[in-house]
Amino acid sequence: MPILTVRHVTTYHYRQPVAFGEHRMMLRPRDDDDQKVIESALDITPEPSHLAWTQDSFGNHVATARFAEPAAELRFESTIRLDHAPASFRVADIDDLARTYPFADAAAGTPGLACFIAPTSSDPKLDRWAAGFLRADGSADICELLVEMTQTIKRTFKHVARHEKGIQDPSQTMTLASGSCRDLAVFMIAALRSLGIAARFVSGYLHLADDDDDNVTGGNTHAWVQVYVRGPGWVDFDPSSGMVGNQNLVRVAVVHEPRDALPLQGTWIGTASDHLAMKVAVKVTAAVDT
Image (cartoon, rainbow, N blue to C red; front, side, top):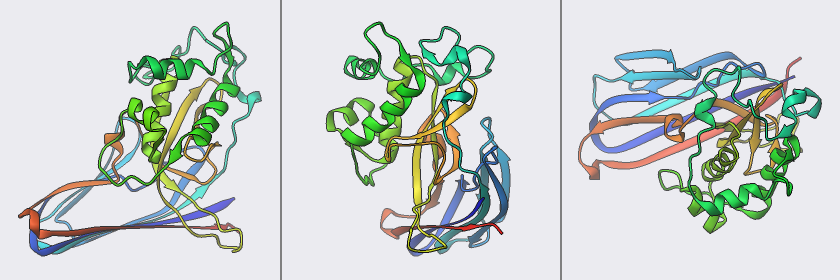
């Protein structure tokens, strides 16, 4: 079973020392059935005067730091080792009553699921696009629907690196037929919810394997989708790659709204010209545990 090491470094550079407000971090991966954190280290420079860890309502790990001293550089280095168990999506795992869409009791017996079913878009074009995965009578094999939608987005939308803040509206993503990983994830969520299928936003890390090396390295921050399917529960779907299942995906946060899954956010006090640069480096290393 692979052991992954994730090193995530974010550094802010300023022209002169500035004061820092509270900073909120979501850098530690979740402890789920298919991934378990073995070791976790968070080094912050300058050292915060206060550092607290909590878990939010979805079970995500959240750290909050406060600072007493100004500095010209602020650096966050997170190093994580975790046991990662790749899991696929199998038809045999789906409850018999949930294998065919539509299912009348989608939210039954699952507290809190209704908020992940509520539509996020009122665009008729998006609704028609989503309905295109259904048969003429409005039914569908749920496994085929989810896999085909994931792979259709990968095939027909262009995955681009977009550095602007925020998320594209799903209608804009559809018009442009392109977007970042977070844009494509939000688009797929909107399409699924238009069909009454529970879906949520996931942020974390993507492991980029190098087949020429026994200890494969590479990686970056990433966003994708989880869909609730009765039987297996929450299943990972990555519309950016077209992949189904959690292989190469490390979950850090699962949320209702993407803005709640930012890896790092905070404030500083100074003039706009004081800010020089922000640099982010992510490295994922995998090795087989012996």
